[in-house]
Image 1 (cartoon, rainbow, N blue to C red):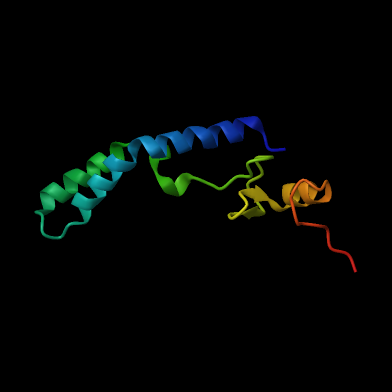
Image 2 (cartoon, rainbow, N blue to C red):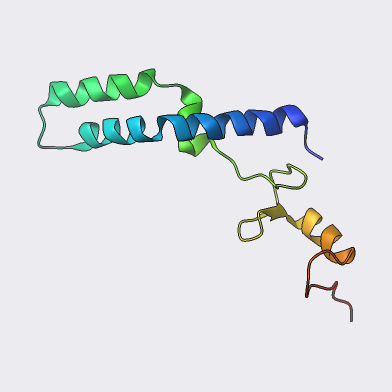
Length: 101
């Protein structure tokens, strides 16, 4: 089980990313538009830098929904390999059995 503080920090980041997504996209559009004057693009970059750091989507990390583990994450199932194996061994995932040969 991951530290609950780390999981809460991740949730806080997800909320900030959702809150500032539109504003961040609009500022990036202005900053990357080559047709606009350099001063206007520079001002957009400065405003982008003033936004909270944790509002950037690159600071998000996938975490297991069951345990909060950040590594060994399956995107399709939204859980870690360890949680997946445990649930499969307990028979809680339909059609999945532990392989043995």
